Length: 488
Image 1 (tube, one colour):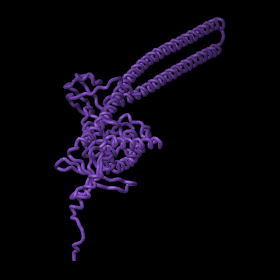
Image 2: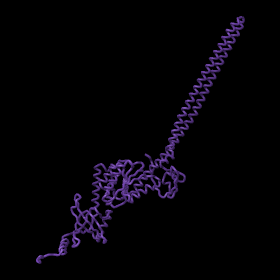
Image 3: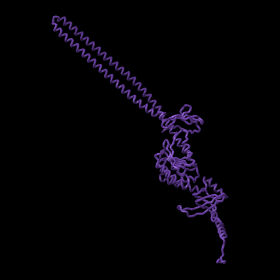
């Protein structure tokens, strides 16, 4: 049976005493805690779940509230840091313990110091950068040279990110008609799963690195906290160790993230990354155009020189051959004339001897006369045979010399024609048609080849010569590059 002598209190009475003790004892103090959860109600009040961790183990936990009357401190926090209070953030706040009979224990937050949260993030970022520098990773990816033309691109981003859409649109809808091969490695780019997701995408890309010229990591804009994943050591290390140059366009306008520091090149937005790739390609295309013109001019000059040399050589060879043949014919004719004169002279001498012998030896027998006549005839035959042999010998010599000269002329002309053919083949390989066939194009304006964006006005009509056919376009936007393009 209930003992009427026991003194007791109701629960509300007892909790009221506890509330009075809290009100009397508690005062405002500066406290550090990590936000495990945060919500707002319809009245504009903020409700927190605060924790303290040691080696990832929760050693303290309680609820907290920031009343709408103190909402200015949240607004000030956003203005100073560029981010709203959210899960995972460490904050330094001015608060005191409160107790309510129905709602229990809570800490009432009056102010939040934004400088402490920024300091914690900056300190962590500094420690990561120092570690990467000590391990020789901070400039490792920068050692990879960028290709003269970036065409095969591996993109690590969220497929639904606005930054990714901007990047793709700029590259695929460029006014120059450049084509790019782009492969997306879909990944989370913010939140708790971002670090693991991006590292996994980097590993996949690394296995296929021979298929790409560069890796691009992009995302849209976001708060500082949204970008915290890009300050993580493991992600930065994975970027530094990539076997390809890494370009970042994370979408921030303030300080660089650690990922930006270790990447080969960093840009503020995905659009700027895309514009950089286009500028690199346009620059290379301009160099190719200049080189093509230079090669064409030099080749034409060399061909003109070779044609001139060949014509001069042919003329000199023909003159030399004709002169040699004329001299040879003159010498042969002179030799024949001298031989004939000598033969007739000797014949005349012999006839005179015969006539003298005839007069002196008229009385000799007819046999003697016949013998002498036989001797004369033999001598004449020998002279004729010798003359004929000499004439045959000179004719054969003349024919041999003539054939030798003709063979040398034909061989020389054949060598020259072969060299000329080879030069023509090289010129054909470097012709504009073959250049167009490899995927390049020539842009005309008013019938002239266009080389500088300064010559173009918005609304100008352009003709683009492709390998097969022409495309007529109208300028809607232009970008100019100052300075002279050079290949080396």
